[in-house]
Length: 229
Image 1 (cartoon, helix red, strand yellow):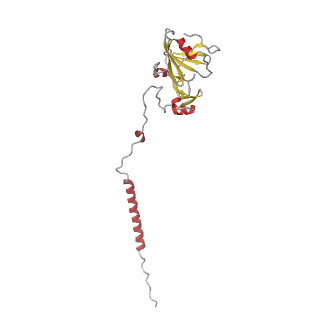
Image 2 (image 1 turned 120 degrees about the vertical axis):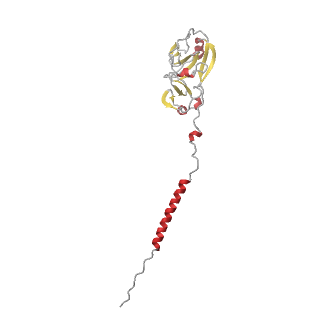
C-alpha cells in the first residue's frame, strides 16, 4: 500500500503584501492632496490689475484734452470712415495724434481728421467761445447790431488759432481770404468775434453757431472778395 501525501497549505504572504501596498498608496495620495490644498493657505490674494494702474483722466478744455479711447467720428480724405479712437483715427490718417485736428461736424458731434474742411469745423479758440458752446447746437443768433464794430479776428492754420488783431467784419474777411481760392472739398477757417467765417470753393461763408453756414460773399474769378458787412 502506497503512502498518502497531503498537499502543503498555500502561503498567504503575497496577498498580505498586495494589501499593504494598496494601503500605502491610499495614504500617500491623501497626504499629497492635503499638501496641495493647504499650500495656499495664509497667502493674500493679489489686488486686481485695474486697481494698480487704472485709467487716469485729466480735466481740461475739450479741444485740448480728449480721452484717447473715446470714439470720435473719423474722417480720412474728407470721407467718414466711422467712429474710431483718437489714436486709431490718427493712424488711419497717417499722422501723429498731436497733429490730428479735432472739431465739430455738421451734426454737432466731436470729430477728428487730418485737416479741417467742409465736413469738419474746428473748435473755436478758447478766448472766443467755450467748448460747450461750440459742441452743442444752438438756435442761430442774430448777427451783431453793427458789423462795422471792431472785434477779434482769428486765423485757423495747421491745427491752431492765431489772433490777427481787432477789426471789423470786412477787414477780417479780406485779411483772411482776399486773393485766395479753395478747391472743392477744402476750406479755410477764421473767426470774427463770436462768429465763424470760412472760405470754400467760390464763396465766403459765416456761421453764428459754428455749425450752420450761410453765404457771406461770392468770389470773383480772380479769387478776390467784394466788401462785406
